[in-house]
Amino acid sequence: MAFGENRVQLIGRLGDDVAINHLASGGRVANMSIATDESFIDKQTGERVDRTEWHRCVTFQNGLVDMLEKHAKKGRLVYVAGKLQTRRWRKDGEDSDRFSTEVLLVPGGRVQFLDKPAGTNGNGAPPANGEATAAADAAPSDTDDGSGIPF
Image (cartoon, rainbow, N blue to C red; front, side, top):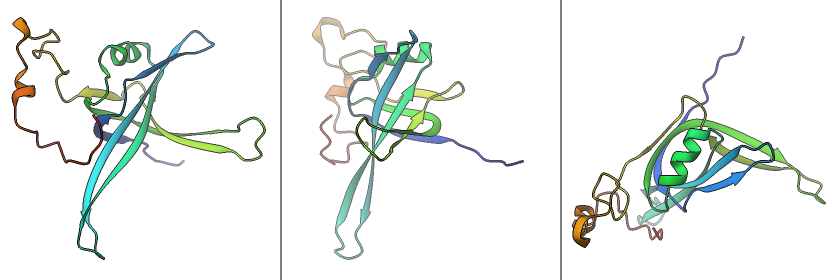
């Protein structure tokens, strides 16, 4: 008997609005791209290096697809917990296989937004009387690392 654990947790920003596709079986699938950033000092040059890693996330769960369709917008800060899955396929006319590793959000997984949607007063409603939100008026946040990702 073998034992193992397949679990991944990410905190990052959505690179685009969620993409919802319809399957031939009648179900739906939601696809998201999440960007995570890291910084380090290059030992050769002594300069700070910023690196962005992109992660594909997918779910087939109807309730989660509905929620993501409403709330998963480009630039939102999101926490996801799921498992890694590698798919293999072959494109027509090619002799070699292609691979894609993605985070699969399955029952027991989790998606949590860590920020408020832009242009809301915190409860999902637009600000009253055209007032700006407190987040919009605040100084740049600690999560802004200046990496130049266009969110």
